[in-house]
Image (cartoon, rainbow, N blue to C red; front, side, top):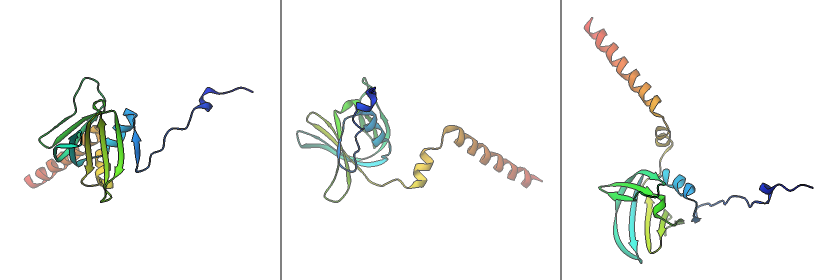
Length: 147
């Protein structure tokens, strides 16, 4: 009887609505779907700042900062030890990014609908082709009007 080392591994975690995520790739994947959020930044349970913003980038780089300014949010998952996923008293999903005594809480303001998700997944070549088609159609209309 042979043993397969892979068969001795535990199954990958499954987290639904509540839990702690430590894998940086999992954190990045989870945050990538967020768009417009309310944020609350606290240190030692003392609120330092709060506001709203748009998550423009989620990345995993050891030498770059997490930045929040002027309604723009750039999150480096390396800035945090883990993400705590929970629900608020109002049944809002809370994404708590934790690093020692610091917590950055993100609460989505709106859930993306399927049209927004579809638009987000269109690649640059598709967008370029669509713009070319629109410009070509406009040029055709202008040429038709000239005659």
